[in-house]
Amino acid sequence: MSVSGALLALFTLLAAPAKEPPLVAFLGDSLTAGLGLPREEAYPAVLGRLLAERGTPIRVVNAGVSGDTSAGGLRRVDWLLKQKPRVLVLALGANDGLRGFPVETTEENLRQVVQKARRAGVKVLLCGMLVPTSHGMDYERRFAGLFRRLARDLQLPLVPFLLEGVAGEPRLNQQDGVHPNAEGQRRVAAVVLPQLLPLLR
Image 1 (cartoon, rainbow, N blue to C red):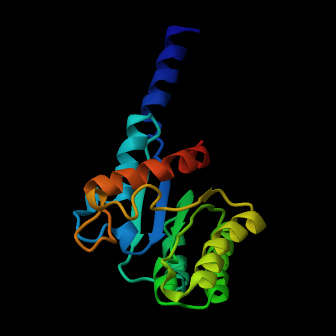
Image 2 (tube, rainbow, N blue to C red):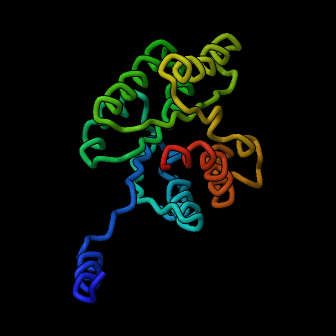
């Protein structure tokens, strides 16, 4: 290659805009929002830092809203998809279960969220939830099963339980015993990371 050709190639490389890291949107409730903590300690922000350390930087949109339900997420997802994420982390349903909403309604709402995302060309990572037995063992079983069924029917990667290793651990939760503290949020990020990373590659 001539000197002028080499200089031209170098100029072209330097002038090319830097490739922007992929956008990952987190659609969730207070667990995702990081209720009671600074936003940078919620698990979406922690994941952003962990991925950057591993050479896979992302941009994060934390669309967690405290108290939100699957129906609320369905109403909000169109706005979120306008941000053009590469991946949507879907972490809703806990409030549906705590309030005893019909399992079929929750499942249908989440199914519609996934379908909207896929029509927009967005990959989806589904995060499963569990609920206490306050509404009966049958409800608890059927609620847990809806996430596995969605993952199977729609061929989705699944985090079986978002709060795996965190729920019921006093040292990992705030005083309410429900919402993870900073260390708990780091544990949640570690649970999500292995399922999220392949979607970015």
